[in-house]
Image (cartoon, rainbow, N blue to C red; front, top):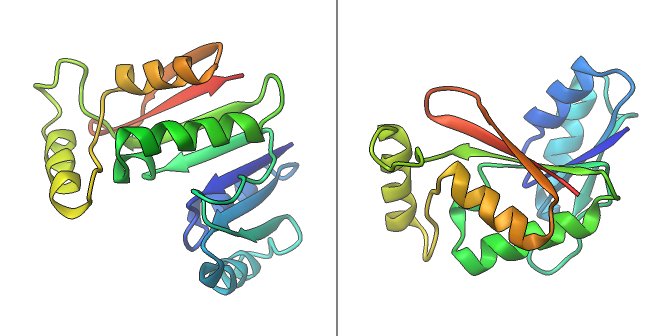
Length: 167
C-alpha cells in the first residue's frame, strides 16, 4: 500500500510508481530544500494527493515508515559502515513482510565483466570519501547481516541491477 523513496531528489521514481499503481501512496525522503521541487513535480502529474515529501537527513533521522523502502543510486555513495547503517534504518522502517529495494550500477560477482559497473566504482572512489560500487552478492550479504530473511536479484539493464530484501 505504501512506499518511500529514500534519496528521492525531484521524485521521478515516486511519480512513475504512482502513475503505474493507482492504489499506492508514496513518500519521497530527502534533504528539506528538495521538498518544494518534489512537491511541484508530483503536482505536475496530478499526484499531490498520493505523494508526499518528508524532509530529513538519512544519517540522522529515521526513514519514513512504509511497506517498501526504495534506495536507488544511494548506497554506492557511502563507505561500508554507512551502507550498513542505511540498510539497518530501512529494515527498521518496514513492517514484518515488508521489503527494501536497492538498485545501483552493480559490478558482476566475478568483478570482470560489467565494465560500466567497474568504471562507476572507480568514479565513486575518486569523487566520494568512501563510496564504492559493489556486487549483488555483496549487497545480499549486507542485507542478510541486517536481518532480512530472503533476498533476490533482478537484472535491470546490462549495467544495473536491483536487490530486493524481505523482512
